[in-house]
Structure formats: C-alpha cells, structure tokens
Length: 75
Length: 545
Image (cartoon, rainbow over the protein chains, first blue to last red):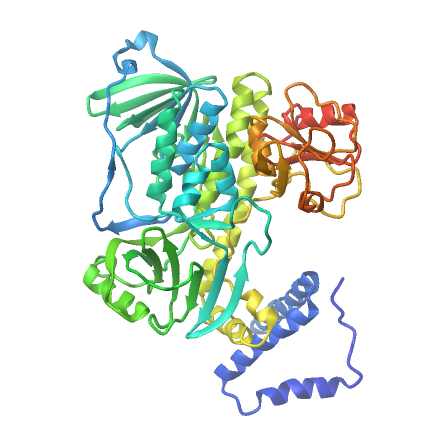
C-alpha cells in the first residue's frame, strides 16, 4: 500500500479547518470549482500515480459503503 | 481520417479505367496473384510500393478513378517521412509540405502553453509536415507508375470475397462487368468504411463521439507562423475549440468544434461557415477550397488478420483526428507488414511471423485510441464535473507548469514501442539509446556520400541491418544482413558525436535493426551466436506471439 492513511498532521484539526474555511462563503458551484482545482494541485504534488489511484479507490469505496448502509437501513 | 458528411466540389486528379487481361480469363483458370492490395489511399499505395521494391508483384485495386479532394489527413510525422524516404517519395513530400515543430495552445485570447516536438538538430526529417492528403497520394501514384511490379487498377471494386485456407478468390466489379481472380494474400487498406471488413464478418465496435467538427480549407495570404495553433474557448468561437494549420499554396486548414446538436445540413453551407471564419481571422479576404463536417469514432478490429485477408490503416482502426494518429499509424501498419509479408512470400520466415503484425500493430492501435480518446474527452467534456476539472486545468495553466502539461489539445503521433516477441531482451547495461522494440533514431554522419543514419539504412537495401560502432575489428555479419559501420576504417564518421550519444554507444556497441527500422536487439560486444539467435527471433523463428 503506497497511500499513507495514518495521521500525518501534528494538528489534524488545523488541516481540516483550513479546508473548511477555504469553502466558507462560497456557493456550491464555487466550492466544486475550488475542490476540482485543489484535487489537481494536490495530485500533482503527490506525483505518484499509484498513490493517487489508491486514494481514488478509498474515496469511492467510502461512497459504495455509504450507499450499502443506506439500503440496509431501508430494509 | 474523418468521415466526411458533406463536401464542396473541387478540382480532381482523374485516372482512367483500363481493361485488364485478367478480365478475359475463363473461370477454370483464374489469374493468380501473390498479393492483392485493396484501396489506393496513402496506406495502400505505400504498402504496394514497399512490397514492389522488395521484389514482389502487386495488384492494387481502387473502386474510384480519382484522388479524393480536401486536405483530410494533413499532418505527416517524421516517422512517416522516413518511411516515404525509403519508398523514394520523401523528398517530394518535404519539398511541397509545410515544415513545423512548434505548437501553441490558447485559452480565450491568451497563450497558455507552447511546445516543440523536435527541439534538437541532427535529424534529416522534421517533426511534422503539413501536406494535403491529395498531394501525398498523387506523389505516391507517380512513384507507383515507375514500378512495373505494381498493377494499379482504377474502378475495380471488390464485390465478393471467398476465403480458402491458402488463398482468396475475389469478385471484382468494373464498368465493363465483373471478373474473378485468386490472391495468395489480400491486404485490405480500404478505409474506415471498409467493405472487406464487412465481407469477412468482423466486428468494428467502439466509442462514438457526439461532437461534430467542421473542417475548412481556406485560401488566403496571412502572416500566422507555421505552427499548430489550438484554442480552447476562443473569442471567435465561444465555448468550443478550434485548430489552425498552415498548408502549402496559401491554404489554411481550420477545424472548429460544433455543438453536438448542430444540424449538419445547415452548418456545411458556405454562407454559414463564412462568418465563423471571418470572426476567427478578423477579415473576409479568403476563399473556401473545401468544407467538410465530420463526427468520429475510436475503434479497432479484434483481429487484424482474418486468414489470408490482412487489414491495415483506417480499415483496421479508427481514431479521432487530434494527434495525427490516423494516416501516420496506417503508414506504420504498412511498413510493419511489408517486410514480414515479403519474408513469408519468399519462405525466408514462417507464416507465423505475420501474427506479430497483429500483435504489434493492434497494441499500437490501442495506444493511439487511448491517447486520442483522452484528447477528445478533454476537448468535449462528458459531464459537468469533467468540464469543471478541465476548467481547473486551464486556469491552473496560467501560473503553473503542471497545469500547462495537463492541457490536452492533442498528443501528437510518435512511433509506438513494441513489446514484441521479435525483440531480444537487453542482456547488457544501457543508460540510453533506443531499446529493443523502439524505432531507430536518426543522427548526422559523414562519409561515403551519406549525411544521415536514415540514409545509410536505406542504402542497406531494407534488409536486417547491423548498426555497428566500430572498435577497430569488423564484426562478422551473417549472410544477407546489411551493415552500417560508424567509425573505423571504411565506416561513416560520427563527426558531431550525436550518433554515439543517441545510441549510448561504446566501441563495439551493435544494434540489430529490423527491415522496418525498429531495433530488434542490441549488444555491447556481440558474439556471432548471440546475433544469430537475435536474428532468428526477429525473423519469426520463435513460437508464441
């Protein structure tokens, strides 16, 4: 596994906060634009396709898990 | 090559139908030909010339009797020019064509990115020339007329195909009625709408792109530099993309992306095209030479070889036009197949050598489809989020290097590197140079009336060739293998040092080049047994393609 999922920030709250604050006052459309640019900037900074692909898989798996959970709750 | 939806009329290069003695033969004794090539486009013509130069008789059929109008495939790559040099037509193409190597990408009114496809000297041929396809075809037809081994029959349309184990019987229709002939091999170069592909029952499925593109050849005098200019969202064509290329004779080729729901019948009318072009150029001082609309698909045949019928060019694979990967990849098909079929016809190699044509060129087609699909997706985003990501790239490109490099306005054709069973894996250590499966590199040389390595390769009569960096003693070349010797007595000299650098050469370094100029093997200090083994492998004496 090339993707690091251990906690890498000394103060994780600061990192989360920085992202949240970047979106403050933006419309959904503007937020989506910001995220798109941010993803590409960070992907380039990582510069490792394997890490990027693993990150995408993790993000997508979370979406699948969420939709499974929603189905189970309905049943 | 785009599929034309509509065209304006234009002058034609006309040829005559002539009756051939084959048409008078009784069905009990049909004419038998070793190779029948179907389709006299750039691929079929080049393939026929190549095979004829290797000493085979070729019948070349075309259902029309003229060369098509319009610029169509205009960008011919360095690799294609080197191939045409071997066919004796390269200089004419370059003399007529517009040489370019720089591309610029604009967003709106600002320049985002500029690239140079051949930033170094010491190559005989440039990165690209722009040349209308009809000029290229006309020069190839002229070359065909010089070769008595090629029997070019206009208005001979293949109407039926009967496959046998060791031959094919073709039914041909002509203005004077039909006739039959036998062919040991049929090479189908009959284009994107190949009728032979339908006759062998092959699938041709792939991705259809909904966006329509308008191409116009415009005659005018203009001061634009000879570069490839690409616009995203240009001021003269809001929200879409545009491409500008210079052609010979003061003709400019303009490609405009239209909205997917644009009506082709309306869009193709000159009175509707004219204002768009006028907005682009800022004036009305131009005349139309040709207007066409096209949509395209990215797709390929599962198998390029169906028994004794072999497919090449657009008949076998289609790509979007962005990247100049249509005609150029078709020419690479031709050069890949010609030497293999030559050896099989001579019984110098087993028939299985032909399987490597499918293996190498279908992998190249996959690569071309992948690259051109990415370009097309970037130009015509399929969803709002794709559009958003593209917008992010274009805005990041204004201030970041990585953003510039992510812009995809077409990745231009370069020769494929074959992961091939014909290659011998490196056993020595290399810091550079073309690896086995890669195309040979050009470099200047001096002596023996030669100026470039590619010239020396042509002089080697298109056989397997050893490119040998001399260590004093001449290596023993196996029979029928050409030798290019760099340095030493009787060798050409590497006065600039570029040959040595480009091949990571040390004294004794030896490359084995295939007859199509691809590297089959390379050695620091070759032994004759290692060379023999590499030659046998490259000639197809090794099962399991």
